[in-house]
Amino acid sequence: MHIGIAFDLKADFGAVSGGPEDLLEEYDSDATVSAIERVLVARGHRVTRLGGGRRFLERLLAASPELVFNIAEGRGSRSREAHVPAACEMLGIPCTHSDPLTMAVTLDKAMAKRVVASCGVPTPEFVVVEHERDLERITLPFPLFAKPLFEGSSMGIRRRSRLADRAQLREWVGQLLGDYREPVLVEEFCGGAEFTVGLLGNGANVRVAGTMEVEPLLVPRDQFVYSLEVKRNPNWAEEISYNVPPKRARAEIDAVEKVALDAWRALGCRDVARIDVRCDASGNPKFIECNPLPGLAPGWSDLAILWDRTGGTYETLVGAILDEATTRLALR
Image 1 (cartoon, one colour):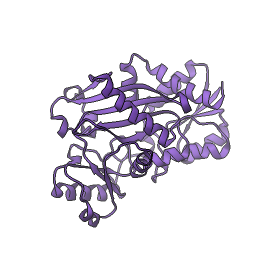
Image 2 (tube, rainbow, N blue to C red):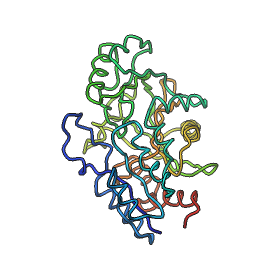
Image 3 (cartoon, one colour):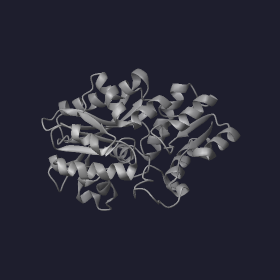
């Protein structure tokens, strides 16, 4: 099969200027694209690199692949992750991962929470802040948590994202509004155990590929933020433990996985997704967010780490995503 890979590279955007230092955090390295390409070629496919943006459109039309393997994050708006699947849909070219609607809804964290909540999935109470004056109407109990509304890859999530009082709320939200120039999600902080759940499948055949608990080692759980500082720390193993499977009773894990599965169904995910769930102080699991375009950096991205610790290889992870898409699309 002729497969095109859609992607956005950090290197294609040049140096960051006039924005936060993590502005390019969502985008991939050439090493990730090469790793995916090697897996596809090893499975007997012909591969064309399509890239992203205008280059993607030009190469897509020129190459006419039979399938697009999509890891492109897009740029410019809350619908950026929907750009590639929307173009493929318009041209009638099959594409891996979720469709444009799911991609757009899940990147808007408030919209995703409204959708899952309407389907009975528990999620922390929240407020969307568009201007600093909106802070005055927040009556949620502290501690709170604040992050940019339309970003991923822990952009704008720092150790200080946990807010203990109104002074911290004003200072941090004001900084986020200025840095990212988009609304900010302020929600109740869940101080219990933190999990990420990998899911594969389609329709009635969706299944949990693995569940990973992110256990803090240096701070109390009710103070812990799985922040960009933690993820970037070369000595991260001193700060956190990735527990696969979680060191929890089966009933607790089942409850976490139910939240993830119910959220997947509510949001209409396809092929693969990674869903973050965190428990409140009473141990009740809550939906935090859904990533239908989970990172695939070998040995770095949470889904790749989770898959490795279930005994899988990077090759079987990429292969599983491809197999889910080709089965859904009746392609071989």
